[in-house]
View 1 (cartoon, rainbow, N blue to C red):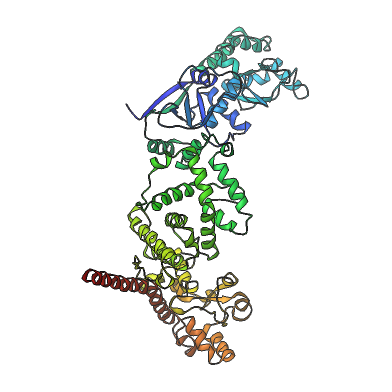
View 2: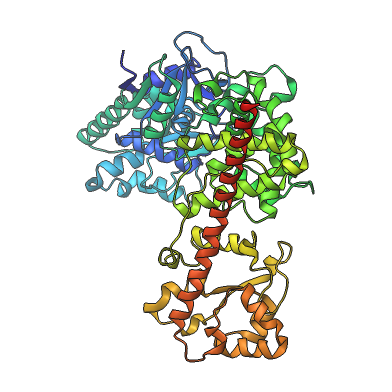
Length: 619
């Protein structure tokens, strides 16, 4: 049987199914958000015969098991028929219930017979016919006995009548959608046309026939419907939804997990997983043990709402594999197979570790650098063993590998999972080893070797530029970049108070020379106050000479720490581009050593371990 079936369902059939309660709205769906003008516009499209977007449904008795509620919000539900989840089209189908069944607490929706005729027969000048003109004129002050103005909108809303259902408004001019779908509009058309006093019979017949034809056709109005086969695989459900949905919201794995979470019998979990986690995050954002900026970055939040909670279920699933030393290749099916209570328990078990880990990375200004997928795997490793939060060697290797990914231009995917297993083993080694043995684990997965020419292409703002600056000023690669040009110490606690200063002023850079002058070769960190007050746009030769006169022999140490070529302060006529090329080569060497030294160290440790193993065999 085909996985998908595309059909047209008549408006009458659709409304009948709504009345029976056979359309179910999954809990993951956003609330109804259409405004009154949106609903009126839908009614206008239908009465004109314009097409509307398709809906996507799937039988509720198939592979997809979701907590859902019937679209019908009042009255007894007739259980006859097959209930279907509305996966896409909730706004439209809910609006149809408001238009043709009156399922709206505040408004009723009507179709305007006068505007319909005026729209179809403009040459008849209906609005100028004496009886109609008089009613329109009277309606300016007396809507009960007169008419409101004719508009181009054929569907109009009115506040609900306090006395109950109102089938008509303004002397039968407006007819409720309920009567149209029930095929009870004939007498209303006749009563409305009585207002056309003195109208020739042929015109009266024309208007009668037209209105009856328009309303009669509405019941058979076709609405495109895509049905997913009940037994379809859940991955297909997600793919199909992403292809055909019109709401702009993609159906995600987390949506399905969240929908399933409503099945929990635990009263504390009745609000569903998304709201449960979101409320926990709102509280955590006020906790000084965590950083609200980290929470917002990781979970797509703004302090009040969190739009991306999916990283949690992936992290928890990866952690579940790693805790059993299993290869961390997770599948959608295994996550969907978890019972409703599983994820609540996992959040309560792991949330503190997750929030502390991402807060630490954020505090060290690394959270915006690390690849999102790799971050989830790294987080999972820490979730398995929270003691790693206090292991600087582990944090350093996580950073080094993330920086390597950026600079080598690699993405992180399933082909990198062997690295995750190695990092997991490193984590276990660090936690269990004696202090003097902690550095004796051969982790070497770094492939970065950067040429100065390539580095020149990475201008300020590029992710690679940020990675290099992090290696230099946060990792203090090569023992350099510990102080700025004024001799001020550069620490994580004060780096936010520093500027990225252009050695050769931006204002004097020619367009054809922009690349190297906008690269890391032309950038140093400098105390913001000094940059704005003392150096500003001076040529580097001038202000470096000034600094030399202030700091004396210590100045050359300062310049060396910032990897400034001697020609920059000794030769005023030195070619700026060549000076920066020299500096860029030195920086490239430092960055490459940052990775190659780690690889060499790992290789040395591995050789020692192999030798020890051979000696044990000989013994």
